[in-house]
Image (cartoon, rainbow, N blue to C red; front, side):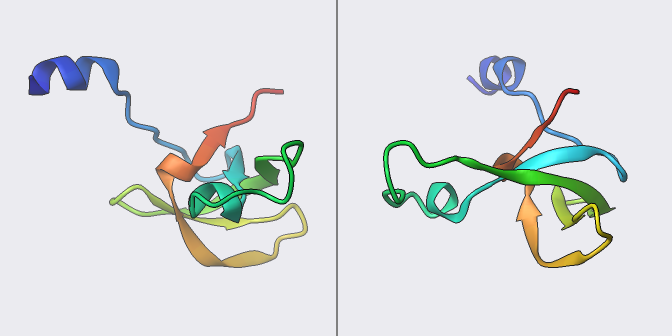
Length: 80
C-alpha cells in the first residue's frame, strides 16, 4: 500500500530564489472564501530560506521577508 502511494505522490521541493505562489488563508484554513470568485493564490513570492522539513520562508520582490513560515503543500510553482 505504501509503495502505491509513494509512486503517485510527488514531494514538492523548492530551491532558494525560485518564484512561487502561496495559497490564501481561506484555502489554508478550509473556510468559505469571501465569494465564489475569490482568488485562491496570492501574488508571486521568492523563496528566501528552505528548511529540511519542507517549510519555507518567503519574501516579496521588494526584499521584505514574511513573518510566517509556510509548508510546501500550500505552495506551487509558477511557470513564466
